[in-house]
Structures are given as C-alpha cells and as structure tokens.
Length: 427
Image 1 (cartoon, one colour):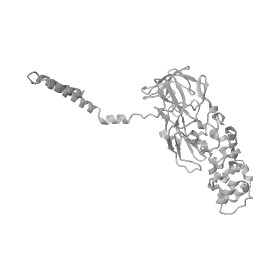
Image 2 (cartoon, rainbow, N blue to C red):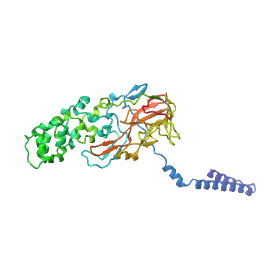
Image 3 (spheres, rainbow, N blue to C red):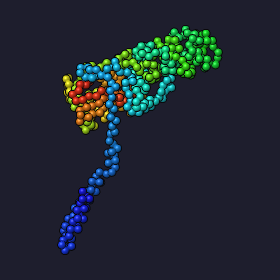
Image 4 (cartoon, helix red, strand yellow):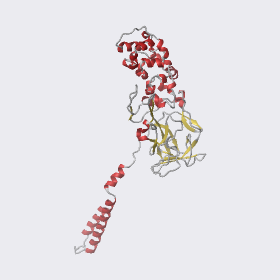
C-alpha cells in the first residue's frame, strides 16, 4: 500500500496545471496521507515487536511425521469393529518407521544394556527385550522346546550363540536352570569342558560330574559362558537346555526377543498370556476434527497414571464418537498433539515422564493412540506405542511411559466402527 501511494504521489506531481505550476492544495493532501500511513506502519511495528514474532515461531508445537501406509496388521471383526487378528501377527509384524534411541540407567547386571537404539525398517523384536513383556505376555514361561514347536525352527541346527541368554550364564547358574546338568560328566558337555579348560588355573578331571566340578572350583561362579566362542557349538550341546523355562536362567529379562531362537516367529495368540479385548464396547467415528479445536472436556483418552478422561485446552485434534451408553459426543484426543503422564519407577522418568494420550483396548501390552486426522476425507490413522520395563532380582526399575513408536496400527473413516475397550466413563 505504501508503494502504491508513493507512485500515485509522483504521478500527481507530474500532472501539473497548463501553466506548469503544481497545485499546492493537492500536494498538501497527499503529503498528509503519506505521513498518516508512515505513522500507522511504525505503530504496528512497535506494537508487534520482532522479538514477539520470533517467540511466536519458536513456541509453535512441532508435530510428528505422518505415519506411512501399512498393510502389516491383519484384522478380524468384533461387533463390526476391526481388531487385530493375533493368529497372524508376530513381533516381526511391527516395523519402526524412523530412527531413535534412548538411554537407560547404568547398572552392572549381566546382559544388561543401558542403551536402546533402533533404525527405520527394523522390527520390534530387534529392540524389545523379554523383560519388557514380563507382566503381560508371560514369555518367560516358554521353554526353547515350546518355541520350537510353535515356530517350526530346528534347535538341532541352532548355534548356542543364537541364544543370547547363554552368554552371561555361569556354570552354577546353568545347573540351577537345568538341574539334570549336575549329573552330566564334564567331558560330555563340550562348551563347559572348553570353558573350564580355558579359564581354570588349576587342573581338573574331565570325568568329574559338573556338580562335582562346581564344588571343587567355587571360582566358577564368576566365569560366564561367553568367555569362549559360542559360535562353535550347537545349542543342544548342553543337554537339557531346550527343556528349561526361560525364567529359570539368570537375568533372562535382558535377552532381546530376536536373540531367543524362534520367538519372533511365534504368533501372539500362542503366547502363554494371550492378548484379549478389554470388554466389548464399540462406538462409531462420528467426526474427525483437527487441532484448531480447543477446550474439549468430554475426553475418554489419557493414561493409566492420569486416568482416561484427560481434557484438552488447546490443539485438541480428536475424533468425536457416537454410540450407546452415553458414548455419543465423547472425544478421543489425538496423541500427536496431547501428552499425558505415564510410567512408574526409575524408568518412569524417561521421555520426561510423558506419553501420547490414548487408550488400552487390548490391555497393557501396548497403547492405541489416535494419530493423523484428515477432515477433508474423514479419515484417521491410529498408532501403537510400547514401553520398556525392567524388573530384576535386586532392583525394580519399573516401566517407562508408552512412547516407543509410533507403529502404524488400524485406520478408520467417518462412520467406521471402532473398538473402545474398558474402562469407559464418559464425562
């Protein structure tokens, strides 16, 4: 506007009267208008200082990347709503879409790793550990023989090094997990024979039983099997190892899922504790609404720590639901914009103690979170988030918030049925 006014002023100055004399009244009017515009511009600049502009830009909320399309989650119907078909889902079904890492508390525990690192394209089994699912899936109740039957792998063709738990077992710990091992002669168990031959400073007889060997050499309680190259031995070179439940091995919690032979190929419906829907409540997606929404109070989303009616004050992207039992008008907030408190214990401090708002329609194994919302075509995506847990014999680190993810989960459209799960209390 300022440029156009200046150009007009110049044009009028050149349009003089026929005697080539400018009209003083006309020039005065334009100079007055020019001064008024300059004053308005300066007032606006002072009222909205550059520092305020920078602060406004820095304070804008960064949003997470859109989830990629995925067909990796097979589904079936429950009361017309899609739910995961656990008969066709295993740990390899969940793939990271971006890189990430977290630091855990430092601890001197055999097999313990204080860092979790993942890359886009890696599957969940390459990052999560047995202990992460101790409370929910009961994986520790499996034996390797159980896993062999359910996965179709061959333990006869599996190397001892492929079973990571073996690396940090001492000979006494192996005997505790496999009591029949105490009666085996040292010469008949090549990994133990070679371990003691390489590490014991005193001589020993290979004809001793392993129980006798332990009694005569108490220092074996400090020597881990990983001192030797376990690639050289078959898993079954330790008699009875396939029959012992995983929970009887020392620090079994620290084993990565992919380092327990065949476990990443067992479908979820075959785990000792099966995931089941929490209740049978189903609603419909009535309206998907973007983050311009504010002050929403009828929330049915949140966390175990804050409850599942956490309201939203601003950036309240959500889906509004319809259904029976007061469900109509209820709001499931998007975890892409709202975080809530989560986790407990030492690990509860990870991620600042926060996790995306959401629900647990299928229990504590993971959290379902409303993620991307497209008002134009009435579609939404949901995501899965997992947590890290660490319980040991001497220290209970607790569990982190549900923030490991997002993993693409179930998509919905307007009027789609959606499984809600319990508890449900609509404000």
